[in-house]
Length: 203
Image (cartoon, rainbow, N blue to C red; front, side, top):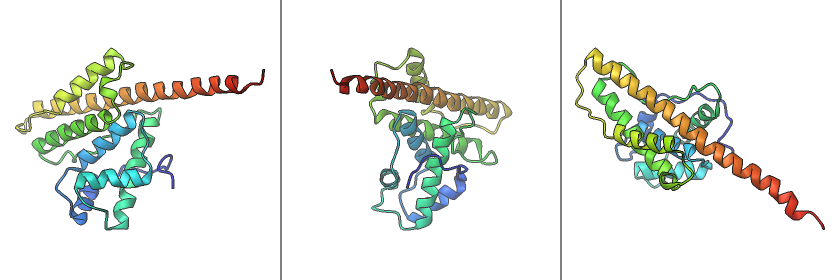
């Protein structure tokens, strides 16, 4: 079963939150799981179903998922994220609480998302990758600062506007990192494909 190229919508934040509760794992935000998956994808990695389920179980601190519906939700989450990042429409969205939630809760979720994204991205040694552009390195530093975002925000229009601005910055930063790292991977594969026939040619 392939996890990629399946046209699905990103599951709802509450749906994933309820799935976590049903599985009885430790309390984590759906934003943490989505950030982690997005970090894997941006770094150029692709998760097979078993690895995806294992990643979720480790995050929830459980042995295995009990419900088949949980596995479907996870596969949908992964597939929708992969499809959105690879799309030319720039319609990638982060899994965050809806706007009707308190601003402090949304700010906390954004910080957790960034923290988990950096964890997923860093698993592949991307933080210290010499091939990363200076812009990409600066972006990673910015995401690290946003991961420390203060959740002591009051319900003010100014704070609301600032949070939306930061959220959009993170979204575009992830798309930029994905494009850079996955293009580099694609170029390596093309170069390898061009070299290989040369090596196998009879003299």
